[in-house]
Amino acid sequence: MTAVHKYYSVDEWKAFAQSSPEALDFVTVSSGTSEDDIKRLSSIVNEVPGISGITLDIANGYQDSFPDIIARVRDAFPKHTIVAGNVVTGEVVEDLIRAGADVVKVGLGPGSVCITRIKTGVGYPQLSAVLECSEVAHEMGGHIMADGGCTCPGDIAKALGGGADFVMLGGMLAGHDQSGGELRTKEDGTKVKTFYGMSSETAMSKHAGQVASYRTAEGKSVEVPYRGDVTDTLQDILGGLRSTCTYVGAAKLAELAPRTTFIRVQHQANYFYGTKH
Ligand SMILES: NC(=O)C1=CN([C@@H]2O[C@H](COP(=O)(O)OP(=O)(O)OC[C@H]3O[C@@H](n4cnc5c(N)ncnc54)[C@H](OP(=O)(O)O)[C@@H]3O)[C@@H](O)[C@H]2O)C=CC1
Ligand SMILES: Nc1nc2c(ncn2[C@@H]2O[C@H](COP(=O)(O)O)[C@@H](O)[C@H]2O)c(=O)[nH]1
Picture (spheres, rainbow, N blue to C red):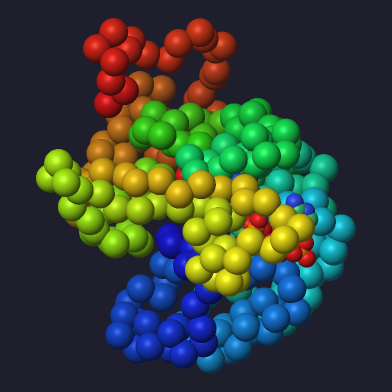
């Protein structure tokens, strides 16, 4: 599934639906929570009937008005799958599911281009958040999506092993042919693409004109090595997960969490040759 960012217009969505109708089953429309955001979301969902998923994506899912906004979107679109977040604690997972979310997105500050923890001091260890939030969501028949912080296939396995039903990836999918960002060849001949956080100065300049004078950027912009077609990366992830399942004796992904135990370690691998992969 791809959560398409919230800055596409209704016309761009219509053109996309016409050119790639087969993709609609695998995308969600993202939206913020302002009146303008909800108006735009409603127009897109009403005018592109093939869409079945909505992602209500805000930096701070603890905003008091968030449950009411989820309930409003649920009333308007009773059959659509609603993903909502981000939060990191069970109590609020419960509130968001009661309000109408099918999937609660979990993660504050773990992202590869996130600087929220540095700029605000706010955050929560991602695996602890996944363990706590998944337990609450599953007791209520809901689901969670672990969002941010995965750097390798093993991290995805750990998120699923911790109880996540979905894992959202940014950095691991950056730099490919299918990713955003212009391909550039540097003076030394290496090819790179730009990858930026949605709360970075780059994003705010592009989508909001500038960083509002009373705010600060909570994301950064980086150059990532060009990595070609995404198929090989996806295959690497799937191969890793398949092998995880065999190590823990899970016949399918749904069996991963009940068969996983975590042990606190000092190092997760041997980095003698300095490389992670
Ligand atoms: N998972 C994470 O840890 C984080 C993820 N992000 C990602 O970046 C995207 C863009 O982020 P960003 O523009 O910062 O946030 P939002 O998209 O949530 O911002 C929308 C509006 O909400 C208000 N707002 C922003 N941050 C907060 C906050 N912490 N508490 C209360 N209100 C807030 C601001 O309104 P006003 O201008 O009126 O103040 C802002 O204009 C997010 O949608 C998310 O995808 C961003 C930060 C953290
Ligand atoms: N604090 C910020 N978080 C951000 C920003 N842009 C995106 N994000 C979050 O990161 C994940 C992806 O994490 P990754 O480790 O897989 O790269 C994304 O889904 C958002 O929740 C940002 O500018 N600031």
